[in-house]
Amino acid sequence: MNSPQYTLPQSDKERLLLHELNSLTDHHKRACPDYEKILAVMRPGYVPPVTLEDVSDLPIRIFKSHRLRTIPASDIFKTLTSSGTTGAQPSQVSSTAKRRGDRPSRFHG
Image 1 (cartoon, rainbow, N blue to C red):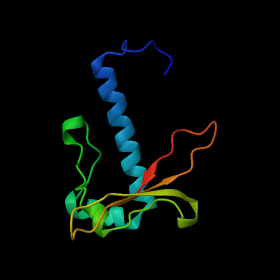
Image 2: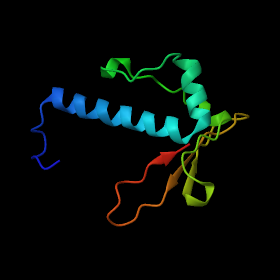
Image 3: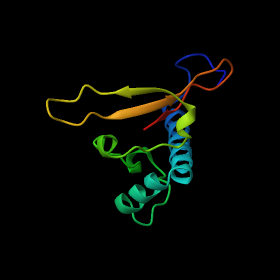
Image 4: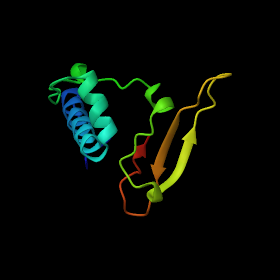
């Protein structure tokens, strides 16, 4: 986007965000069979949302029990681990390396 900061109307921001969230959901659904299964259970008959209010939440605890990954393990640059609480299993989220000219790295659980 090449517009001055804070000039984009709220409705345009919401439309762009919804498009990006739907694109990410589609990408992860195609690239991660476990995510596709989770989505099928959480949202049977899933159709992409048409408003931000309709976007599904993914329970954060899912990252404690599942390694959701849309990239090969060999492409993981860094894995962030939560401190968790006493006796609780920590969450883990992995990331690809950011290279000059690339979009910001995407996180992969």
